[in-house]
Structure formats: C-alpha cells, structure tokens
Image (cartoon, rainbow, N blue to C red; front, side, top):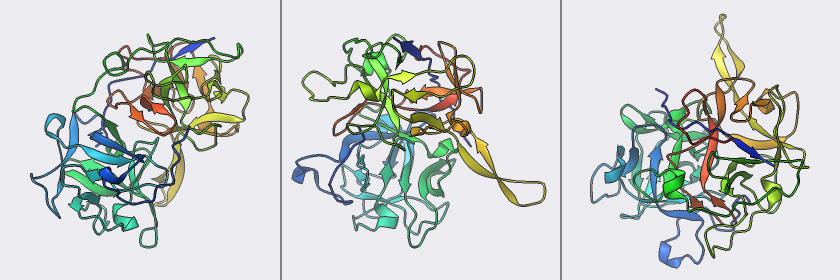
Length: 355
C-alpha cells in the first residue's frame, strides 16, 4: 500500500552536504562535542495518518519490537545525518534499531548496540529512507518499511512511499509559518538566474545540500535564501548553491547556476513483461528523491517544465517538485535543512507551493 501526502509544491521563481569524521557507531550524548545525529527527533511515516516510531512496550528492553503509533505517544530518537551512517538510537532506553536476520518481512526490534553494519548501521539522506546498505550477506539495500502490520525490513524501492520517513522536533507536524521563523528576503546575485521559493515565503529557497561547492549526487532541500540560519546560528550557505536557470513551459533542464549540474529525479524499476521476464521501466511517482547530477539532455529524469507556479517532470506531467510538509528542520554541520524535497502528485495543492 502506497501512502498519500497532502502538500504539493508551487514554485516561485525570483529574479553543503553534512560532512563528519565521526565513526559509524553509537556515541552516548554526554560524550559528544559535536553531533553527527539529529537528537530528540520523532520519526514519522510519510502520509501515514500521523504515525511515528515507538517501542511496543515501556520501558523498552533488548528485543522489544518496534511499532508505528500515534505521534503524540511516540518516542524520540537520535538519527544519523552523517554520510557515513550510524545507529538509530531510542533515547529513553539507549537501545538501537536492529534489522535482525534481515529477511524481507522481518520485524524490527531494539537491541543493545553491537556495531554490526548489516543490522544496525543506517543511512538517512535526501531520499527520506532509513537504509542499511548492501554488504557481504545482502546484495541489495534494505529499508525500514511500513505495511499494515507495522514496521518491517524490506528491499529498498525508489517508488515505494511506505519506505519514506521524515524527522521533526515535535510530535505533530508544523507548517512553514508555525515551524520556521521568518528570515531576511534577499535578491539573486546573478540577474539571469532565479531563486525557487515556497509560496508566501520569499525568505526560503531551494538549495543544494552540499559543502562549499556543489557536487553530483547531492540532494536538495529548503534553506534560508540569505544563506544564514536562525539568529546567531553561524550557518553560511553560498548563493551559488541556490540560484537556478529554469525551463519555460516546454521541456528543459533545471540547471544550477554556471555549473554543469542539473536537477534529476525518477528511477528505472523492473516490471514483468508479457514473456514472463523483467524489463527496466523509467518511472517518476510519489516520494522519489530529487538530486543533482551531471547535466545530460538524454536523461528523462532531467526534463522539467515550468509554468510560473509548478515545476513538473516531463516523464510524468502529474508529478511536481514538492516538499515534505510533515518534516521539521534539521540543523546540520554547515546547512540548515528546513524541509526535504521530493516528487509528488501535482493535483492536490493546499497553499504551500513554490511560485
């Protein structure tokens, strides 16, 4: 069962990946001078009627099963946001998420930290998946998946929104007005380029989640157009990471400034053909990652159209650039991630668009 999300992104065009040397391990909070984790966050299932992760019983112990429950009753977690990954820590018990035997359909439990890479070391990035990467025993990535019976282990699929999770500092989601303080409005430095804003928030821009320079395969997110975070936060994101050239109403690329990097989405998925074998099929649908890649006009995932309100994918004209309204802001090393971005159905706008 694929889920639904209520917020479609209108775009308003106007004229730093987290890097850490921390190990892929669980470090108790009192011993960390700098956090490679988002501390004290709820983990919410995208579009799943306010469901968040929690242990099945309290107090939780070694082996306690993980469930999805009403976010008001759910737990807080430490989620790794460093590129090298880390343990997902249940803050109350200090136990960690564990994939056990790793078989698809297996339940997820809390366990003492052992550091086993194929059981406990998760990666959480711009695709909103809690993923354990392939390894010696598993040829494919496995993701935390939510089905009708609760959280489970399942092979990662880019078109499965049951595997999309967002993190936030409050049990219930807050919209941009409630959850993100007003920042300064600024002008683009290159008059030939554009900011991309959520409607009614010209202080917020679509930006590369990157270090001082943009790199291929990096994700995108909302941040403050001024490049700074909250007052005194010390964030400083370059305008070069958030100024874009936009296509017209016809198909075209969304290119980052003077770079050779373009927005790309979609993925090849395998489908059964009439002969009983599987063939790859390019697909764009709800909940897919949007990232930067080297510009290539032959890639269908880099073709977009722009009508002054919506940025649509050409591969599926009913899929638009969208932000995860259920998420919260995340303070990263040199980047303030106000909301992650994704593709979603264009037909259900509710006022939080980019224009």
